[in-house]
Image (cartoon, rainbow, N blue to C red):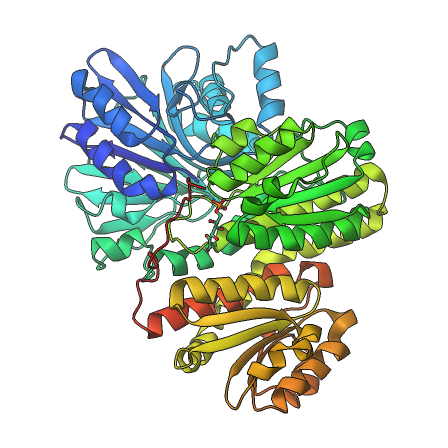
Length: 610
Ligand code: F6R
């Protein structure tokens, strides 16, 4: 995820671009840059680090001009650095591009361009776009962009300028958001409404496959094939705070709703075109080394640790190699048995968690190969690990992790399948079957989100209790642990997650009349067993909400008071769905209790102390 902004008008563009980028920093903040038409031509200033670095650089040497584009980056291809920052240009420096998204076939395109003599400065996919447009240019920037876009595969929102036509700004949208702002004698582009709300409330929202050509006085809208289209102007009547949260009341709710996109983006380019295999070109570990691994440790903290619990089942199930999971703060003090044939997988949204970083270093000191699953390119964990799989969830602002957790699950599925292919532990048909089911997950999450009101009702009744239980078996237990943590951290209601079969060994004594129990019953092989455990708590007066598979309503109705059904998927994939109602449950419980959902007491987003 990145943020893009553009301006064409009669005012100085630099302050407008910088203000706009500030509003988009939530979309990424590892580097930033702007390109402006100055008297010297198309000039670019860009720098790694927060937007403040760019502002400092520009304060001494401003770019003066009334047309420009800007970008705040969240690295996907290439680490955060000055050269990898946007805007990118072609070799003639006459074309400049800002981009949000991923060009899946950029390596092939880059190779072709290099054979034709093009020189590339960065490791990004975006630089390829500016070169492609330059190649296609024959006097009309709109046609050049259309021809270039036809060659690209993936997701992109683009802002394009060329020195040859300084009175036009071209914008394209394909699977990454982009809006056009309409002002008097000035026009804007942006990834999101807050970036331009200060200047105009009248916007066009581009759909996938549409583009816009902006001049100071007009906006031409067309498809990327060049067919003109008409659109209604959308008048924004939200206040700025609501707009930053995309119309949601809290970042947490927004991030819960971003999960379908996070799943999609994390899978993008990592499943072969025929859907039969996983491709992870970013992995450096050789097939030979991977085949020699005989032990796995998964190490992480909090929610990331809970993703690791699911990761354990995925790897053991698909690759049949023993996996241990450890909370990072415990790992290095327990003297773990690590050999050169151990793969240590560290999981961290921020990539900066002190305990996880310490565990990574301990593992490397003992000769293990370390694979990191993280959401932040260029973070300490990403830099120090031997291998990295980036989750493409985009920046997570709410302290309670939601889309980062679920994208970590997607990363585990992809890696587990990749390893199974390498070791030959699963046949091609099985891999293809799981991949097909994975690709259905984004839509299935949408279906769950559409029923948020049902969960809201349950959450309001739960919020009246001081304590409750989450129970489940197998993967359901792993998800129960995450549901319980989420509820504790933002609603401050005490809860415990228990393996459903373990209750009767002590904890059942706490079950009394009216106590809420959230029971996950999605694992088909364990279905009957979990139902009998539910009967044990029901017999003692518990009020049971069953998280069940669609189609099981009638059978489960006898044992539960209320039910929430998730769409059917493979048993191994259910965590990617069943966690969503639990996230909503904790969100709405916190809301009902009037807590600060996005910033719960005593907690911080990034824990950089041991
Ligand atoms: C809970 C939560 C924390 C983090 C934990 C690890 O919602 O966010 O439990 O998961 O502090 O953080 P990362 O993943 O950044 O290493």
